[in-house]
Length: 249
Ligand code: NAP
Image (cartoon, rainbow, N blue to C red; front, side):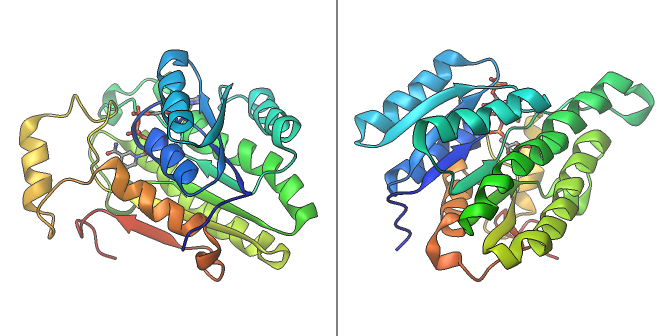
C-alpha cells in the first residue's frame, strides 16, 4: 500500500514543520523528494540528511515560490535532476495575523502571494509536464480557517479559501489527463507557524476537538501520502480535513 517507488515529488516549504514531515514520509514510501525552502538552508539540510540516513533519496532546491521565475526554476531544476515530476505538494505558507483595521496592504499582498499565487505558479509549471505524461498528483495544503474563518486572519483565510476554489477548478481542467488535484485542510498543528499562539487558545481548540488532542505534522503527512498514492487514483477535487473533527462540513 502507498508504494511511491519510482515517483518524484516536490514539497514546497519543506525545511520544517508540516512540509518537512510530508517530505520525510513521501521518501519513506520510496519517492525521490525535492526539499524546498526560501531562506532556511540549515533546516533543509537536516531534512535532506534525515531522508538520506534512512535510505531515501532527496535533493534541496532553494526557491521563493511566491516569485514566478523562481517557482518555474524549481520545476525546471527538478526535471533536470530527475527527468519527471509525479507529485507536487504545494505546502509553503506564512501568516501575518492582525485585525483588518490594523492590516497593512503589504501584509495582505505577501500572504496572498506566498500562500495562493505560489500554488498557481508551481501548479502551472508542473501541469505542463504532467499533461504530456498523462499522470500526476497535485496536493495543496489549505486550512480549516478557510472553512470556519478566524478573527485576525482575513488575509490568511482568503488565501486558503482561494486554494480550495483553485483545487476544484484545476481538478476539472486536468482530470481528463489523469491528473488528480486535491487539498488537505489541517486543524491546529504545533509548528513554528503556531508557536506564538496563546495557551488559552490552544486549550479551547483541544476542548472543541472531538478527538481531544492537537494534531501532529505526521497526521497531515499521512493524509498527503494517501492522496499521492495509486490507491487514491479515483479521488479528485476533494478537500480532506485533518483536524480531529474540529470543523465538520
Ligand atoms: P512553518 O513551520 O512556518 O513552515 C513553513 C515552511 O514554508 C518553511 O519551510 C518555510 O521556509 C516555507 N516557506 C515560506 N514561504 C516560502 C516561500 N515564499 N517559498 C518557499 N518556501 C517558503 O509552517 P507549517 O505550520 O509547517 O505550515 C505549512 C503549511 O501548512 C502552510 O501552508 C500552512 O498555512 C499550513 N497549515 C498549518 C497549520 C498549523 O496549525 N501549523 C494549520 C493549517 C494549515 P523558509 O523559512 O525558508 O521560508
